[in-house]
Image (cartoon, rainbow, N blue to C red; front, top):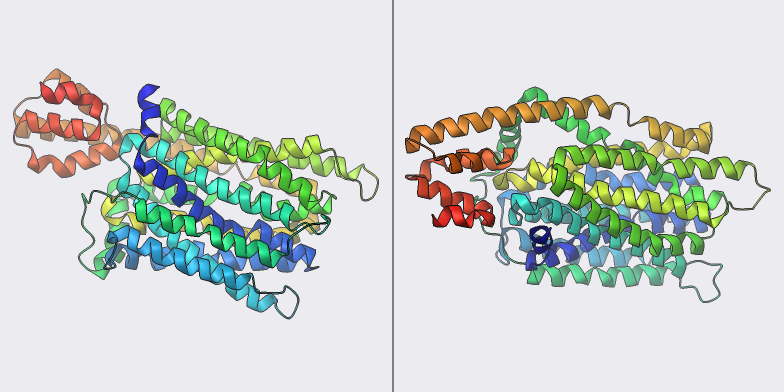
Length: 492
């Protein structure tokens, strides 16, 4: 446990916390608070979900321009940090522009355009943030890095969906206007700029792609070469399907809770209070689970918690049907719903982010992670748009049951990918040991036992570095570089 906790005590983890915050803030600004603002202004729920889905479209297609961010480096702050500062400044300006708007039928189109612009700059920031994480984190740090980054992400989300809803609640005598709230949120984005300036520069083990063609084509070729066609396609389908139910619920949470007569203050206080505690706890529990049972198995735990987190919303819908008009269910049930959702989301964020990071090759990390996260968010963009209409047609109770049922297609996918990964890992390990034995004549039992403990990504890295090994000492030093616990092996 000591070595696990030591992982968090580094400059890179502090940077990832604030970069996660800078990623979460704009993505939430065009989600919960915007929905609440439009709901208060009397905009129809169908128009609200359509606007939200349009704002999320850049996330679904960010892989299209991600090769540009992999290929080209700005003349300041390095390959990743330079792009981060540019996108963060553009986000500050576009969020401030949103603060100047007045929602209504005439202004809805302009607000949609601004929301899409925020989504574009936010998606671009995410491309570089995720690439930075993939570049700066070593394999043993990925679970902790994913947890700390998503912790910052969730804190920003809870600030926007918690504090913002409370501050702008028209039922409060001293409430702020939504315009003022958005200006404050724009100012908070400056934390991302500061974090980027002080973030450690990744040690460049892989150079940028030599050409734009290489930046576009090679990331896809590399992924399928390492994973195989069938397993690769299965992984991409899993990425799309994994969070469908969670996205369905998140797409209607604010309108649903207000429809059953909870106030913005009630929602905001619970989300921003106990919700943030549940998220922090979930993120760190997720990191511990990954360290104990590995990334692939942690996906099962996270999926189960996401599904369980939908049940309290179904209960809320059931209870609301039996209450007199304009009476909300108890706050205790609201607390259960929000806390279970946010705890499960915290675990899932750590597990699924670590899973996506483990799939990336550092040379193409921006493009590959952008592809994976674009596929994941494509489900959000295309599923959230009709959720309001679906809920209106089938009723809230049936809607939440449908959301829980989306877990079923992911079960056989997880089983297949887990078996394929184990098979691939064993094959890669035997091949690596065979090539090492051939190159170094013999391997000591101690060296071979260390190689047999390597993960699939570490084994792939080992096979790429084989040519630089001339003696067993070279291999021992390499093993120490990826895991300092091998110090004694390297010294011997």
